[in-house]
Structure formats: structure tokens, C-alpha cells
Image (cartoon, rainbow, N blue to C red):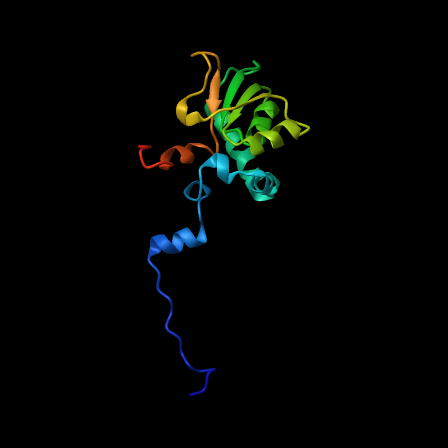
Length: 157
């Protein structure tokens, strides 16, 4: 037979496996504090597409808080990462406190010239050490999905 005209059988994969291969989710590969090492944190922060998505989602999240017009509010940015979403909070005229579990992401946040908030290394899964009522509002743009993944055999997310 002529190899140019020979038909091949397509490789059939289960949809879930195919989806995992196409769009592997970082939260399925390792806990956030391990996944976002220096290399991954830098890649995330330098991705123009991800930065634009973060800014857009943060802008909308702040709008949804329906904060008083003309008043600077204190907002908590849960899972702030490298402070991309936090910067949007500043653009909207508010002050922010950002927390994240990834030390590498927080280092990038500290080194960003436009980063003007306070930062803390905190695991949101075990709670945030702040008094109730300390903040006028909170956003969490790319962090909540990490709460839905079992990191140890005894966890029940």
C-alpha cells in the first residue's frame, strides 16, 4: 500500500484524560506553596494573558463589592500571589492587605514597583489571622480552586 493514502486509526482518549492533557490545572499537580516556586511564579507573573485576566477579574470583583463612592476602603486580597489583582485594588483608589501561601509569589509582589500594600505568608485553608470586621471587603481571584483539592489523605476539602 501507498503510505500517503493509508488511513490511520485515530487515538481515542477518555474526555477527562484529554481535558487534563490539554488544560492541566496547577492545583492538581502540587500544593500551591510547592507549585509556585520561583520559576513558576515568574512565568505566571510575566504572562500577558494571565495578567490581563487577573486585572479584569479584580476590577469586576471590586465593583461587585459595591463600596461607597469616593471613599478609600481597606480590602483583603486572599491568595494575592504576585499582587497583580492587588494593584487593581490600588487603581480603584483603595488600600489592600494581601496574603498568599507561596513565598515565591510574595517575593515578586514585594519587588513590584507598583505594589503598595501589606503582605503576609498565610495558608487561607487554615484561616487568616485578622479580627472580624478588620476589612471593608475581600476579593480572591485565583485562589479558591486550591481549597477544593485534597492535599493529604486525611483532608476533606
